[in-house]
Image 1 (cartoon, helix red, strand yellow):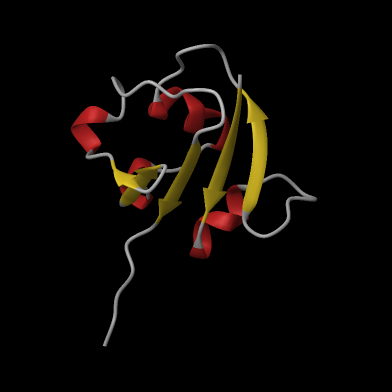
Image 2: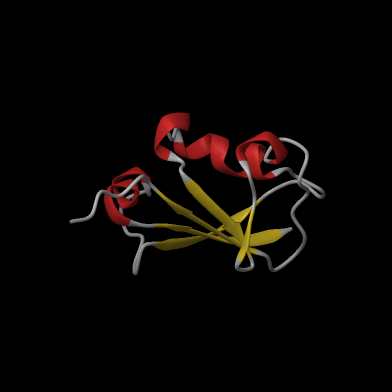
Length: 83
């Protein structure tokens, strides 16, 4: 099934060359979890601060058990400091 992965801020560096607008469409196995969908990108867990599936927050403890569906959008932000 196909998903859209969006990696923001410094996480965009983990996308493959040729990715545009901080996003890439990927093919994953049916029912893949959030964790398994992100695994190929090699993101350090401490940098996956804010994870959303279709705009809904997925807490760290639920990422391994939250299943993705065809057409889902998975967006990830690192911790960001503000002033």
